[in-house]
Image 1 (cartoon, rainbow, N blue to C red):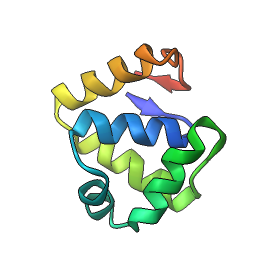
Image 2: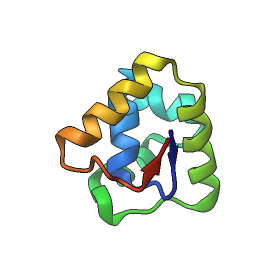
Image 3: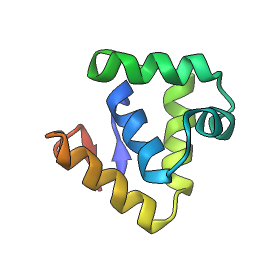
Image 4: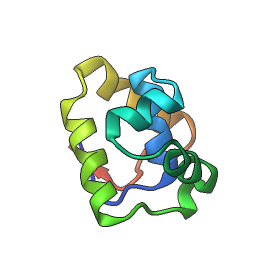
Length: 87
């Protein structure tokens, strides 16, 4: 699965699928906790920087199958099943 354009909503979906608290997720991505908090607060209106998009891509690509499935399932549950992703 590849996300064409990450938003705060998708970042939250990834964090949820990875079952990480916000601070742990921020450390995992090597970004600030406030950055992750801002993404999530902005939801689909926030598009992280190109560098952050790459970091999120890497985190998703390294996630195990269960987390990837959870990511897709979480987005579907909030009505973003199409969410600019492709397999």
